[in-house]
Length: 330
Image (cartoon, rainbow, N blue to C red; front, side, top):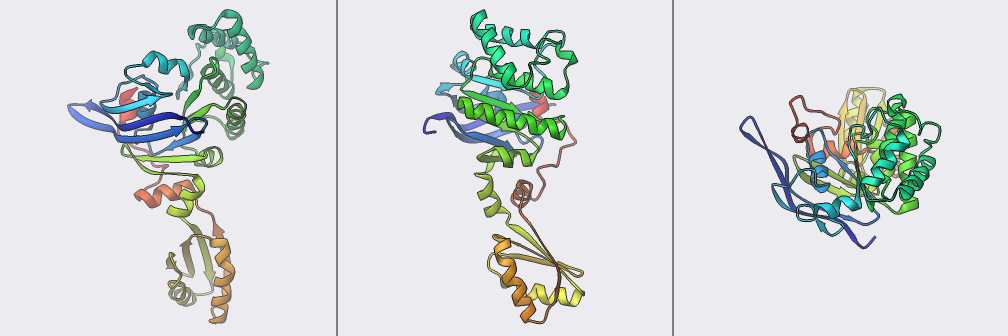
């Protein structure tokens, strides 16, 4: 994974909404190596979809530069489109058409011969478990089947880079899990670079080897999920006591812990600290030696939402009530 697949420098996109200038993306610097699976996270309106639309040549940047597979997204649009697959938030197949026919048509649009397009369609139908429904009208497929067909359409020309914009939106947990499995399998088999946006934090945690957190159009964190959680959140140790007095004494004693945040309320003390499971036995021994009885103990590992909450003071799951710049860009 030494070759650069995506490189942006100062990438910016502004929109005019009712005579006001909205900065959807502000000076975004990204680097994605070939073969990586990267999750782009952020709340609604953070600039994720706008960024993907610039990288896929659907909208031009206001300023800055971006290259995909070495091609400038403005000057070399045709070349960019030949090496990428893009699965947006809506279904891409025509509802009145049969799924397999849509795949062949998509392949032909990329310059494949009819024979090669049919062979590739058959391969994807098999690998994505669509054989039983591929010759049915798209309108008759379930949500999960349509989403897998969208993935197949994005992969028909064997792209080097695949963009997935909210691929699991609207799917039930079983179909989400199945889709994640298919994406990881296809990546392992074809070495495809994948960039996905998602609001399912467990999805990003389980699939991505690198997470880029975006807020207000800029990158605010970029690392592996494990390092982001260790550096920006820490484990949450919750201790229960028989009285508020015991909790207060425990909180005062635990405040000496290095790099820990201690809070108490009622008969409960919460300690946010890295390496929680490793520290709990020592904490319990220390409190017992001080004559403070602990009645209950729980350790919760941090989530990516905890990371974002710590970085910005709000949750990744918080939406926006006003029209977002991402909707304006559609």
